[in-house]
Image 1 (tube, rainbow, N blue to C red):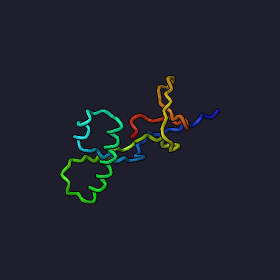
Image 2 (cartoon, rainbow, N blue to C red):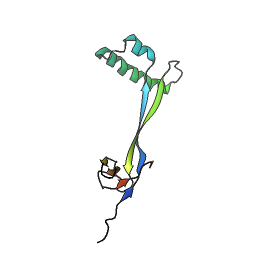
Image 3 (cartoon, rainbow, N blue to C red):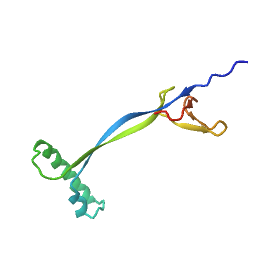
Image 4 (spheres, rainbow, N blue to C red):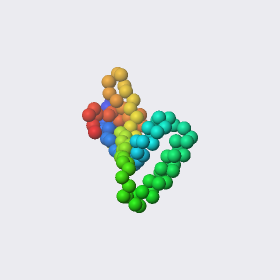
Length: 108
């Protein structure tokens, strides 16, 4: 009898997207007590329009915070799909739910 070959892969992290977040000056949230309401939403829409104009004339002294958030996900190196782990209690190893490959521990 021949042994069944076990596929072995690693979990690799990949950036799949980046979001740019712009936070308005803190006084906008303080003024409304942090409550989300229709008036606040309209004020933020107006602020966003004014911010676009501010980008063209950047002499404003308002503090604006711009930051990014990366969307990082794990992928299987065998099938290249986003990794969904199945844990097998019998062999105490994780397997890729898509292709069944054994996922090595510590693979980044």
